[in-house]
Length: 291
Image 1 (cartoon, helix red, strand yellow):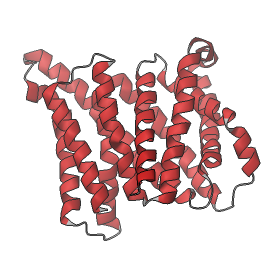
Image 2 (cartoon, helix red, strand yellow):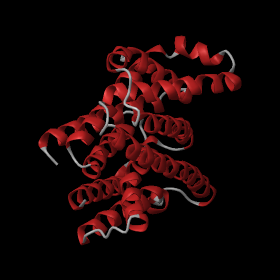
Image 3 (cartoon, helix red, strand yellow):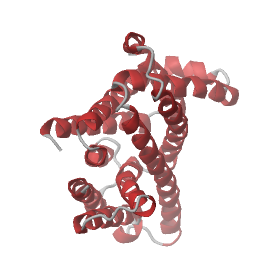
Image 4 (cartoon, one colour):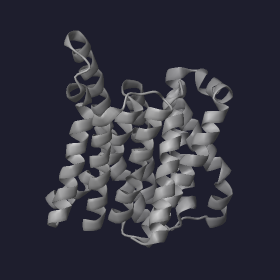
């Protein structure tokens, strides 16, 4: 992967970790995310207008991506309600590259090199360490331990669903930007997702959907800018580097996210989670080189 692509995915990883941190600290996560999707699409809509119309072959990708994004942001908000940021973020982001590699083995008949298998094993080992942190640390006993394990299991379980959705939309979007430029494509998919989510949420939340815009203006604005900015950088990297390389390299955000959860949210981290996050990160690097 070129230095330009590496710089793009590193910057994207930092921005992605930051907007996830802002989302974690919000009290209305799915509503904030939905309005951020629409706000980002609105701000950059002139670029969509200038590039209109999309090539015909882009529409299937855009519609598929929008549907996956609906599920992704819904599950992401739920994951942050159930688990620590420093657990959910590494599991969700770190599992996706391993899933892509496993799918390639099962469905495409690919055979990774020895280093590829090492990378997959390192990622999975890191996830086990992260998910089993309460057992490894021994800080909880009896009912406290069981309660902590239940909390971590809920957070980790939905984080794996998030990872699956990440791998799907990454593959779809990576194919789409071979036919169109990243920002207009993102404006289209973000706008489609937001326009579908708002009516659905209004049925459930009523007028709270619109009050959130007033009470959470700053988080919505921050997430809108960083969300679209980060993924635009990733899609640009997809254009100049193999998707497997760039898709794995972007997960440097795992390190940024785990540190943010520890430093800014006061979440327990310690040596065990440090080791788990490090294993995931090293596995991703090995997988990227082996791809």
